[in-house]
Length: 282
Image (cartoon, rainbow, N blue to C red; front, side):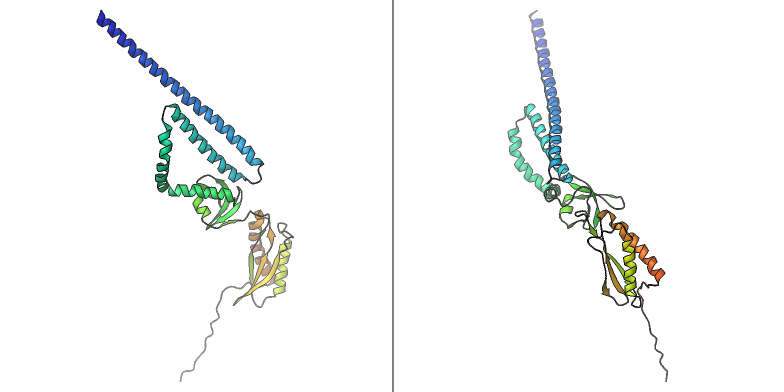
């Protein structure tokens, strides 16, 4: 009888232990879920508040706002992760103390990643472009579509999606064609030396004056720019809005060719005159 009583007592202890462990595990899971849900809600609310504040600020553009919101989101989720570890009873002191050594090691392992992140910060602080701007970076050009902590997304004129690392963007000269409201169209026209220069200039002016996209101010320029070996080069410089640049450029190329042909203005092409001298044989 005594042995049976001891066995029952032992089994009851095991059931009680498992019951306490199960309840503890259940409460821990519920706690983690609550931390994640509350953390998610707080992060969403914080991002909405910051987004409204950024939209009212004149110093923060859309691209900068997106970048800052992503940084805030990452930092907040790291904090939530630390709270979860603390809830599980993990001592955070050694983790925080080890971040210095870990950061030093990761700094070597992820030099490119850190370089892109820092370059992204520099782009955000200096704001060389905004979403929708047409830029040229090195040999690449296109419209800015998006930016995150690692890269910038461009849309090229032929509708290709190009993703460039922030480090590559910041390490090269950035030409922003959308920075101002006007852009000068740079075009050149060559005529033969025998052609009437004044007539050619008048034909060019007639074409430019027919374009509604060309702005009256600054005034367009049509002038002789260079006397080449076989041609007289004219420079044509009207001003347009950035969105009308290529429409004016391409249309002018075709129309000036057609008008010059119709009016007898010769457009020279590279050629070489060869003179043969006959020699009398003795």
